[in-house]
Image (cartoon, rainbow, N blue to C red):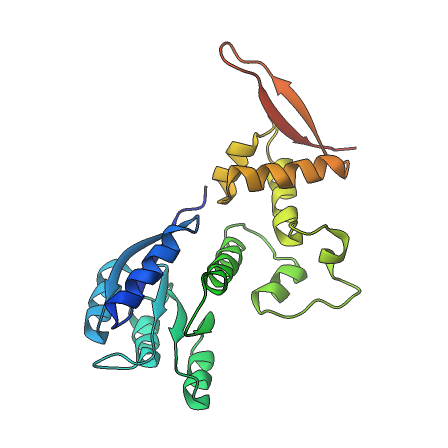
Length: 230
């Protein structure tokens, strides 16, 4: 099962930091581990906890968020960065891009923009959970490269079904010899049970999977999903 993504908020305005925290509380798979209001506080948090993700403003009382990235590269290289800022100067945006920021969100932000950014980050992060080689479509997704008509898997899936997530679930089903419930799948890949069920039912409708009711010794039977092998 993929672990919860730990987030550090770096924002000098405590009211905005609290808004970010409340936004994160509404998104599955993320947990705020702390808030820093200055660059020095941020460095202490990063050194002590090495968060998975940092949400950082550009202008802090004692430094710039772009300088925090350099500190992260040196002291916590596995930490990713998303900027949330009102700064739109070309030099600052360019510096954030060249230093590897995952996203750059301009204030004032909406919850939908915030949610889209974090969910996209989670999908990209989850792409690294498997072993072996990575499909070209996934690599293109990691670098936000638009698919060409010849290779766009999304063309063949209805609204609400992401091709990368679908392929990940198919792969997971192939490794589940005893079948899997929607709840089990959701826990394994880090999505809600309703989302897992939607993808599983889609695979059944496409004749890629089938279901069986498994009766245990007590309680109601479980609806398990199996990949079709022929």
